[in-house]
Every structure is written in C-alpha cells, then in structure tokens.
Length: 445
Picture (cartoon, rainbow, N blue to C red):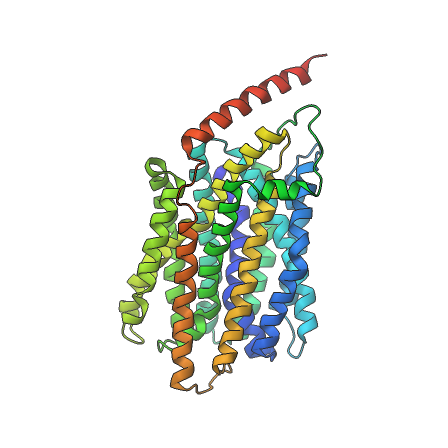
C-alpha cells in the first residue's frame, strides 16, 4: 500500500526537477526570452502564488466528503497539472513573458494541490515518530525515480537525434501521461481516515496564522526548509551553465552526472531514514547537511571533463541531500500533531502549505537571484557564446557559495531542537486517547 501511495509523489518531484534545471534554460535559449525576463517571470509568479497555498491548506483541512478529505484534491489537481505542463514544456517559439507567467501560475496551482494533499494524507497514514521517517523515506525513493526518469529524457532524446528543445517537450509528455496513472493507483490502493475534531474547538481565524508561526518548532522547520530548498535549488538553476561553461562537459554528459547525483538518493533516502532511528531526525539533518557541504567543496578539485573523477563527488552530494526534504516533511507531521493537540482541529494541510510556500519561495529565489547574478557578471547563456574568464569565475563562485551557505544554515536551525521522539510519543498518547473517546461518543445512538 505504501509503495502504491508513494507513486503519486513521483510526478511532483519530476516536475520540480524539470522546472529547476531545464525549463528556465528552455525559455532563455530556445524560446528567446532574456535571462532577466525568465528570472523575473519566476519571481513574479512566486509572489502572486503567495496566498494560494495557505488557502488550499485551509480548504483541505475543512474538507469532509464520503470519498475522503485528501483523495478529492488529488483527483482535482491532476488535470490542472497536466494541461499546464503541456502548455509550458511544449510552448511554441516566440511566446512572451506574459505567457510564461500565466501558465506558471496554473502549473503551480496543480502542483500545490497534488503535493499538499499527498503530504497531508501521508501524515495521517503514519503517526509514529520513527514510522514517519520510513514512510516519507519511501516517498523520497519514489521521487528519486521520477527525477531519474526526467533526467534520462535528454540522453534518450540525444541518442534519437533530437534537440534539447524536443527533449523538454518529451518531459511534458511524461508528466501528462504519468500523473493520472499514478494518482489513480494511489487513491485506489490507499484507505483514508479523517481525524475527528474536538467538540467546540474554535474555528480557524486569520490571526491564527501568527499564532501558528510563533511556535518555535514550526519557525525552525520553516526556516530550515527554506534554506534546504534554496541551497539545492540554487545549484540546480546554475547546474547546466556550470558544468558546461566551467567544467567542460556537454549537456548530455552533465545530465548523466546529474542523474548520478539524483540516483544516489535511492541509497541516501533509506540510509537517512535508518540513521534517524538511533539519532533522531534533527541530529540526522545536521550531519547530512555538513557532509553535503564538504562534498560540494570538492567539485572544483576534479579535472575538467573527467566523468570518472566527478561522478563520486556528485554521488556523495546526492546521497547526503536525499534526506533534506523528506526529513523536514516528516518532522512537520510531528508539529501537526502538536498543533492538533493544542487546538483540537486538524491543521496539517495548512502546515504543509507553509512549507510548500517556503519551497516555492526558494525555487523562485534560486532562479531569480542566480539568473540576475549571471546577467550582472556578464555571463552569456546563448548556446555557443564565448564567455570571459572573469564571467566563468563568477559562475563558479556563485555555483558553490550559494548552496554551501544555505545548506549549512538549514542544518544550524536544528541546534537545540526540542520536538524529539520522546516528546512526540507523549503527544501521540494524548491524541490517541482523545480520538478514541471522540469516536466512541460518535458511535453512541
């Protein structure tokens, strides 16, 4: 059941990778928009998207149908994502910035509907502190499979004699076909339990946002999630430029290396989940963020164009990065239990909406900031362009400094973190006792 359910996570990760690595370059190189226009479009969409996730989270937490709470949102989000993916990944040449902005808004709406519903549903499926690490770890493996599938498309397209633009179109087709199939499998194979609300619990008000955000555990998690999304997102935005312009690889070879980075997650996600059992989730994150940063420092030590030298470094970084996102999501489910115990109502969708917003903000900032920096350094992203040594050096500094700084900041957020396994076990004990009483009361005639 968990494997089938986790499959619905695959298209969201595949889309995230495609947006972060290939779509901006596609619009800058093939469609003909300037770097500033592409970076500005992503930044504008993130700003307009600011209110969507919290509203979706509130709506999901209030949803009660005979089909379930989150199942209906998965079904509704799939076609939104499919249509917008087709419009963007198969965009005709010559479209403008407004086209990119409009369809990005629709795409992120579908993405949010799928991701929020799936994450919140996962939090209710696994309620034990350690079990959550395992279930979210399985989801991470499914996400790695989706990322690998996306990254293999350029290589397969190249062998078929297709252009990079045609490879991006093939990514769109992959999303259009895979999304409905995997969502259908998840909702067919997975039961859904709607947690009971406490009788007389106060309805959610706008000022309750501030109350939620004032929780130390949530503040730490959101800041960490922002930093741990921004670091790898920054790296993704500059990846193709760095490995082709600085390290002497072709786009196809760089994609293979990126595939190694992503495939390392097949081992890294289970290993991180296993390590969290004796050490705890927050300690595990502090270890993996430090190891990731040390590994990234070694990229510039590898000879240019040498796949054999670069592959172990990319594998190490990918292995360590595999647990960043799923571990913070598992910890957010623990915070959701704490919030429900205090407030009497389910708020986990809203909490994941906050986290989804930080991830989107990081994605926009990584693309907007890095593309603006490249333009300021005089780096020319046009295919075949010749860049000065100063521009290439600036690219190298930007590629390394951003991810290392933000990833280390993410790890530092968990120094002194309090919501550990022991505290969560007590929260769950109280919740389970209260839920049992509510269900018995509801069953009385």
